[in-house]
Length: 102
Length: 167
Image (tube, rainbow over all chains, first blue to last red; front, side, top):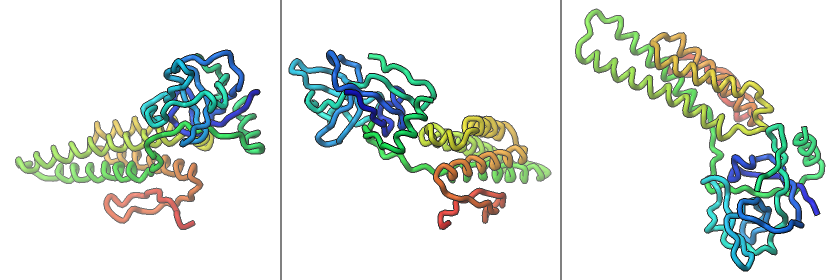
């Protein structure tokens, strides 16, 4: 299942900017470090972040693209059950839409 | 193209939003800092030129000139810094759509503020005030706030753009 999600905020700059859209897929072969995911966080709601580490049991350690992001320590380990989808493509406000590189 | 289509769709359907949280609440922007700094440049040039009228300059006058020049450098840099922050941090795609000449205007302010450092020509500083006024009008346009021009109630008594917050 594919879904379009709107990005709000600056923590993913320069990879994603405020006002960009991301296409996410619920089905993906496997997650890798560096990929972007949209998760439904228990405390912070729906957030888009980068996968920084993956624990052996599949729990995710997430972070932003810059020092303005919510700290990974505050996000904590995120259960893979909370993943709404992996970001497949970004439709950027700055004219061109590009593939989000892994 | 793709983005504008989706943006239009978003207005109708309203896609879910994912937060890319900032830890710092960074939403306080106001061009008045830049405007005051630009006015200071004009005022400092006036004070420098006043000393020029003196027949002989004593040590105290030279010390005063050096203070004034140093303050003029600081004020010019302050204009650049304040405008750069609004342009770099506050302006995003929607604001750039509203103000198509934002990049050119910001760049011209950078150039003009540098000129103010290099000269004691009042006209150059007046040009800086006018450019910052234009920038201020652009900023308030993106906020949906009307503006008016009025002479500032202190030296150098130049025309300044103010937001009409009661409107």
